[in-house]
Image (cartoon, rainbow, N blue to C red; front, side):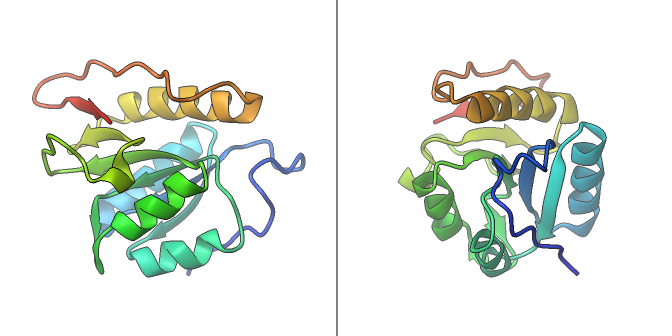
Length: 154
């Protein structure tokens, strides 16, 4: 069962930045949810399908989203487009190497699986603090990850 928060991400009552989780691997999804909680974020989800995530987005605006490029109901281009159009900062976590992402993913930061949680934490921390403070977010530098991981910045 997914708990949907109806308040906006900038709600003064909620001091923990919300992060939407979209991952169809149940083990990785649970691990990601716990890691985000431990890092001080308010995880929303995890959602195994685009359809579930899109329904959740009707009632709230997270500070960021962590999504797999492909979920149980297919490629996440529609979800990525909605996130981009709404200005929701997105980290794509995938096992696929993509040299040039589809336009819907152009503003996303890409991390390859297996996910190094310290790298994800650094990206989310920088992204959400800029989002909350109103600073520009398109100047985030790529991060250097240990082999065989690498970041792909669109």
